[in-house]
Length: 256
Picture 1 (cartoon, helix red, strand yellow):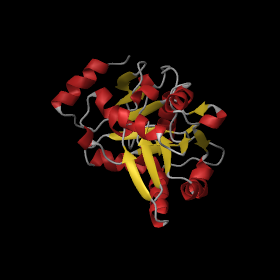
Picture 2 (cartoon, rainbow, N blue to C red; picture 1 turned 90 degrees about the horizontal axis):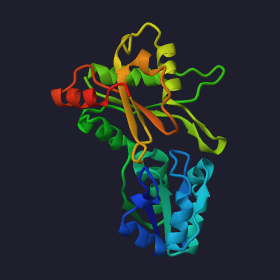
Picture 3 (tube, rainbow, N blue to C red; picture 1 turned 90 degrees about the vertical axis):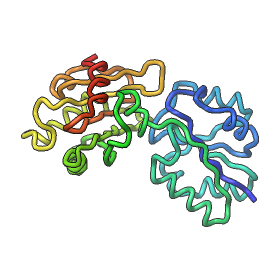
Picture 4 (cartoon, rainbow, N blue to C red; picture 1 turned 60 degrees about the horizontal axis):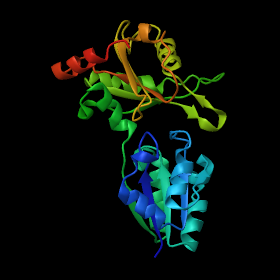
């Protein structure tokens, strides 16, 4: 019986993979990867391919969501791997692919890895169980100005919860929404400060999980003026009331 393995790549590069994952990849017939939910370090896929002795085939979002490429590989192989930057099941499309493989009668396996969903909290010193619903901010476009993420932020703040805000990316176009742009969008969509009060502190994290990881903490208006360097970026909107240890941790972060 063929099997499909979902393998998390972590947030940095090929050095983030454990020995179990590397050994498993060496025994694969086909290896697929996607980079539309996050990107890995430059050259990391090429180095991993050389290490495990197999080519790594990049799939687009359309190819993953159609499921046919992966299911066809399972039909003709013994073991297939699907690689995802971060953790595989931080994205719902990957859960859908796992269910499709199981419905087709194939076994599935899962090797987790570090994810921005928890690593952002760790970098800042915030308690992960105090986070509410994660939200995303898409690229702005003419006639497209969604505000649904503000509803989730409002709900999180009313529950005294932190909010992780993920930022849109289009790696095939070399486009990444920056933290500065995202902060400007937040203020433009909430000009009266009804959701995020004027002067409210926010945090920015960049390149989490890499040696170049950085974090900033301060008033939204002040951070919106900063340059946070290369991608990837994310925002964290702290709960209105911080635990004293969270407060002490954020004081160590400072404005950068």
